[in-house]
Amino acid sequence: MPETAAHREIGNEPLSTMAVADTVRGLGGAAYSWTLGNDRLIWSAGASELLGPERVGCADRGRDYDGLIAPGSGLGRAEAALASHSAGIRPGTRLFETVYCLVSPQDEPPKRLWVEDRGVGFFDDGGRLQRVDGMVRRLSVGRPVRGSGAPGEAEPQPERQRLARLLDARLGDAFLSGDEFGFLLFGIDHLGRLNDAYGFQVGDEVLDIVWMRLRAQLGPGEEIARFSGSKFGVILPALPPEGLTSAQRFLTSVNATPPRTSAGAVVANVSAGGLVAPRHARSVAEIFSHAQDALQNARATARGSVEIYTPGADKTIERRANLRFADDIVSAIGERRIALAFQPIAHSRTREIAFHEALVRIHGHDGRVYDGATIMPAAERFGLTRLIDRRSMELALAALREDAALRLSVNVSPASIHDGIWQRILEEGARERLCERLIVELTESANIADVETMRRRVSWLHDLGCRVAMDDFGVGHTSFRSLRRLGFDLLKIDGSFICSMMESGEDRHFVRALLELANNLDIETVAEWVLDEETGRQLVEWGCSYLQGQLIGLAAAAPVSTNAVAGT
Image (cartoon, rainbow, N blue to C red; front, top):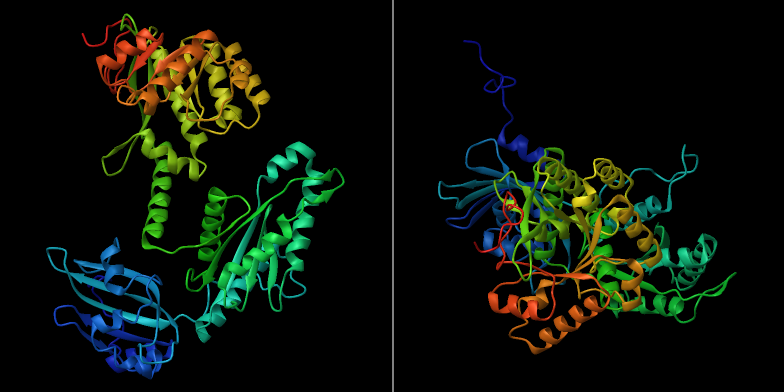
């Protein structure tokens, strides 16, 4: 039997251990083997040169070596191996890759060394880590950035690429020297509203004024570059004693007085997010990602403020989990793993089933079924709500075709009703007169920035034959005047007020006031999360039109027969 490629050795004389060690050393690294049972850590030649004489005394034991890793700088090799899902070539092994910063022992002058640690973890049958073999290499450069920026390039490099090149060079210097630098990301708050209110010319003028005010505050060696449409990045090569709190001088210069444009003075605030590299980020991509996280937190806390990135394993793990889940959402749409569950909604007095709410479900590759509360936060963060809303509407219309007696309500984000593809899906259903048995639910908690545009879209839905409901009413900011103008047919009172109203006097008064408001406007109401008969009777007494929740029935794969009575 001929020898297979998998078992054939290449060449007659394999490299010796010394030759392999020399190769690794030539790459600026050192190989190691760590046995967890006795905590012994063995290194190849070149380890002293790599780690420096001040750290050699702590390199013989795994526990001592882990003590050199700066807190928050990255996962140690054991943590990385345990967290890895990449199977090695041999059974019971996992491949890992991590980056962390080694500090000097306590009795030595502080000096930082950033290293890349790649290897393989060996596990026993019980999943316990037994040994780690790998290679540590000095991290001397940042992530490569496309384009050199040299004169005469075929295409001019955008500002963001220039910013990336500057950061990449700073990272390379920092890895070699052990120094740190600061990065600030400034964003103009609500630039889109300025463009809508004053026009794009005035918006551009505001951008220019903000740019000039930020640039005027630059100190020696500091750099500024455009990050995106309304964001600017500033590199602080030498951190002052007060750290990134010096960012306040930039914000003060911009926010102190309104920019004066051709349309007069306009209100424009700038917020900022900052970090220290490579302490908080070890690549250009991480710098951009963490700075945007910090900027988002600043805007959520107080517009016009600065927020410094706070590192933590939980945040990194959460981001990676969200990315994986977002990828699963996209694949679920393509693989038709999205389905609907049907929750009955009954007339409050007779308890006859009036219609069902169609609730989205995703069937994961792992066999789990994910509901909307799990799906939508990740979908909104990664811009996937329109894809989900399109598929949900397709499935709802298919269910209406199949059952001529069925009536459904379907959730949709306010942004999706302006989506051309979603509109065409609904118009196709209208041609089959399916929309006459359809309620479109819009969430009040979502931002409805342009009431007049939304009013026209609600009117369009009415023209197609749909009824329109405002979902989660009570948790948003819809005013009495806007409620009348928008023309909703139903209000669904948020379940967080309903489920606790019999124990909370405040919730009882609030729910009763909402019901009185809706009745005075001749708008039907749906109470969500109705758990028991006592709550149901109270809602009937206050004039609630429909009940939804555990009392009526939970969501199921198939709808309940129309006109059936809940609880029978």
